[in-house]
Image 1: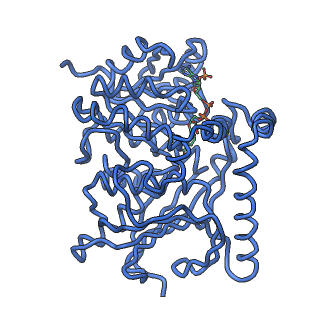
Image 2: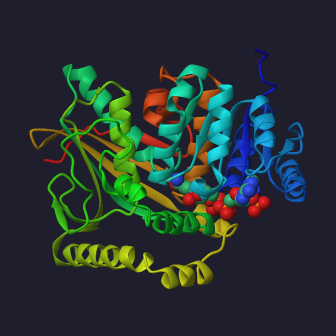
Amino acid sequence: MTTPELDVVVYGATGFAGTLTAEYLQDTYGGDVRWAVAGRSEEKLKTLVHELAERRPEAPKVEYIVANSTDRASLDALVARTKVVCTTVGPYAKYGTELVAAAAASGTHYCDLTGEPQFIRRMVDAHHAEAQKSGARIVHCAGFDSIPSDLGTHVVQTAAIEADGEPCDEVEYVLLGAKGGFSGGTLASLINVVAEAKDPAVRRVLVDPYGLCEGSGPDTREQMGVRYSHAAKAWTGPFLMAGINERVVRRSNELLAHRYGADFRYGESMRTGSGVLGWTGAVAMAGGMIAMAPALFIGPVRRLVNRFLTQPGDGPSRDDIENGFFKARVFGKRNGTVVYSATVLGSQDPGYGATACMLAETALGLAAGEGLGEPGVTTPAAALGMGLVERLNAHRVTFTLDTALPG
Ligand SMILES: NC(=O)c1ccc[n+]([C@@H]2O[C@H](COP(=O)([O-])OP(=O)(O)OC[C@H]3O[C@@H](n4cnc5c(N)ncnc54)[C@H](OP(=O)(O)O)[C@@H]3O)[C@@H](O)[C@H]2O)c1
């Protein structure tokens, strides 16, 4: 086999998250990496390439590749030219299947920003064995869902194993705060998950805490109500991304030969504060989630949301992205007592500025052959582990093992 001429191709680069990812690569690495942008519209790609050149005139001109997700031959030609394809073409369940098929068949590494459990399940079933044979590492969820959760857990468990020779039996992830928005593409993906949930096979994946694993374990469904977290010393409500993040962390544990333990338990929530105000906030949050999910199941409501909220291609303003942040704490416990914890901090909007960095660094780690992860349909922690933590620590997302535990 000949070595591909490119390290990374950003596919969907003319969309909202894709443009941010391309800008991150240009600003951070410029000509140090052999990379290209790709998409379905040649006209939009030409404009993007021009804008990228203006950001960094001294860097070599970024090449573009035209490929449509409905044209398998164009995707085969794309993956043949690169070590890694990183894609922001979503909703992935609608537009992503053929690219995973092309990458798995050719042995090209792949990463994406999907948060759609039913899509990942289909890719595991259809392409895990093939990717194991071809050598492709197919890494889903390389953005705000689910890197902070997946790598935060990995950091805590690695510290526990190195210090004590055994992992924590439970990890609790609490989002302490975040400031950010939604893009049209993210809303379209969320709405598409709900639309597909009419299919009983999809519903089974969405309600099974181990829906992305082959085996099972002790965890039940994600938190839907109000709960006091003794570790965070605060009231918590449900966290919208828990549905995907928790399943990804459990898949990591399975792919890592149960490094976190066969009976490992994992859960996520969002901090609302202490006292009566914190409790009231948690009740409001839980009420909102309980009302939102069934409402989106009603076709006309879904169509209204689709019509009046942000459209594909749109998203938060540049100022809002730059002023965004997130902070989470990951508590590792033994018999209910916190023994290790880590803090995850992200600068910029979690789903966009921070996500662009997470996706691009995942792609670069795969291109550099980092991590000991086996090929197959895998996760950020299983594929790249502490190597990706080190990469991100040098940029917009940091993972720090806490020296002080909650007393
Ligand atoms: N995990 C996370 O934290 C996270 C964060 C942000 C986004 N996301 C996910 O990332 C995805 C993209 O979000 P976004 O806001 O960037 O969406 P977007 O702005 O709508 O971008 C979608 C991209 O897909 C391209 N596309 C659509 N149909 C195509 C086709 N048939 N062939 C080739 N390209 C096609 C679009 O091309 P054109 O430019 O030509 O229209 C566009 O570039 C969504 O699924 C979203 O949920 C996840």
